[in-house]
Length: 177
Image (tube, helix red, strand yellow):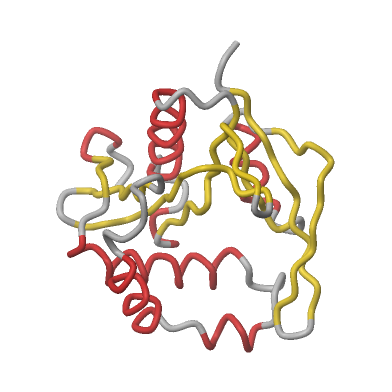
């Protein structure tokens, strides 16, 4: 499982929707345990997520890229990148919307490989910066992002999950210079 040579990063295909949704739900349940209401995490459904994902797949203007990490034929991770969302304002910067691993594949290099490919693609598209949001209490994710060159920029915005405010910290990484 630690053999980085067997890991392959590629664009997500329609056939990947079910497994990507499973990875997303497992990733949320793993990463946010104790940071969000457990009842909310328990209510997440890979089946429901996959139905939405299949319905949206291939729609849009092509500005969002979904990548998957595979070890052999098994998908172990997923990332989504696209234009930075600052309310309704669109900037020339990019955003890492999501990066999740099957919890059994955390600390195997798959997340690092997904991050590197996401950043490479953002730079190739001419973006100067990549932003992301991370739950303030998610120390594991924050360390991961900081090792990848991201830094908190002082912006924090809470959102609500089942009546509980969950603070999210904005991180940024410069791609040029």
